[in-house]
Length: 134
Image (cartoon, rainbow, N blue to C red):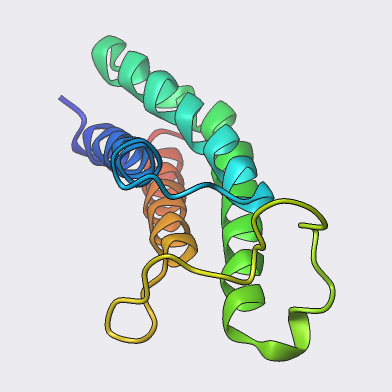
């Protein structure tokens, strides 16, 4: 059993279920950047689950592009929410504004920060996996 793969898979599943909870149960409507993050996270739950089941330690080749892009998008989204100077240059021109937030736990924890954290955990896990099995 590879604990790094398991940890990355659990993180991806938790992120996926969390986003579904916010949208389907709490009825939070995702913005455009939220959708991009979902598009990158949801396949990771499946890919990492299969990799864990098959003990495929070379999966990092396919996971890292998704998770690194997820870090970039969720990081930008979080900065867009918290830095007023960035709120004018938005990728969300229609629908739900990307600068708004449904949660603001402890004054700084928003949904994009949760996604950013999950993508970082997955990315670090994959780099560790790559280093151990390169």
